[in-house]
Length: 273
Ligand code: 2AM
Ligand code: CA
Ligand code: CA
Ligand code: CA
Image 1 (cartoon, protein in one colour):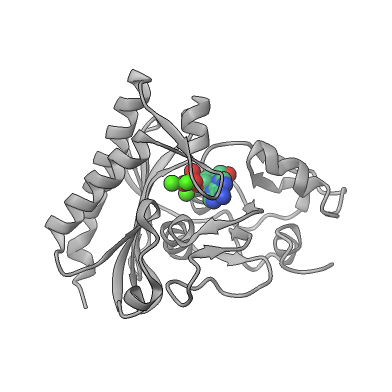
Image 2: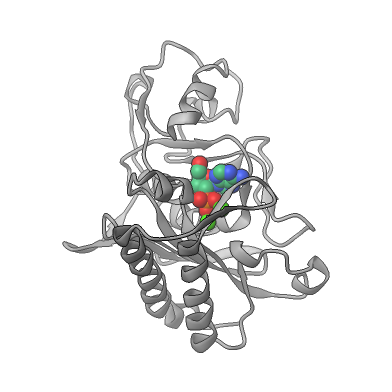
C-alpha cells in the first residue's frame, strides 16, 4: 500500500509538467495527428505527454504499475492482478487542442483497491490545478495560491441550475426530455475533466457527459468531486468501477454537485420526476 500523502506533490508536478509540454506544442502549433481505431483523434502532443508522464511516474514509484489512455490495451489478465496503479490521461480534450480552443488538461489518478484515492487535473492554458487525496479535501491551485474547494450548495430554485456541457452535447441534453421550466445556463467549456472540476469548485451544478469515456477520464475528477462534497455517477445509477472488467470504457456519466438536491439528479438523468 503506497504512502499516498507523499505521492501528492510529486504527482502534481508530473501532471503540471505534462500540461506545460502540451502548452509548448500548442503554442508552436506544430504537431502530427492521426485517427485511432475507435475513430478518435490522437496527436503527437498526446504521445509526448504520455511518454513524459510514464517516465516520471516510473522514477517516482517504480513498484506501482501505470495504465495510460495511450497504452490502454494492457491485457485484463495482467492488470486485474494490480491492487494499486496509476491511471493517466496525458491530454484530455484532444479535440479542443486541435480546434485551438485552449480547453484541455492533463490528468492522473491513483487507484487503490478499485477506487480513486488521489487525483490531479491540470489545465495549462488557464494554469489551474485541481487535486485531492481521499479524506483530505479537494483543492484548487493557481497563481493566486492554493485554496480548498467545495461544490455549490443551497440552491433554492432550479432556475439557478448551471450545467457544464460541451457544445455538441448541449443539443442532446435539451432533446432528452428534461423539464423545459428549468432555466439552464450552459458552460460550453473544455475537457471532461475540467468541466467536472467546475462542478467541484461550485462554478457549475452538474456536468453530464453522454457517450463513451475511459476509466482515465473519470478517476481524477471522481476523487476531486467526492472530496469537494459531490460525486460522479453513471447514468444507469451503477457505481463507476475501475479495472474490474475487460473493457476500460464506461457509459455516460454525470458529475454532480450538492447530492441532496433531487432535481439535480433529475437533470442529470439519474432519476425520473
Ligand atoms: P480525450 O480528449 O482524452 O479523448 C470530449 O467531449 C471529452 O470526452 C474529452 O474529455 C475526451 O477525452 C472525452 N472522450 C472520451 N472518450 C471519447 C470519445 N470516444 N470521443 C470523444 N471524446 C471522448
Ligand atoms: Ca482520446
Ligand atoms: Ca480524456
Ligand atoms: Ca486523452
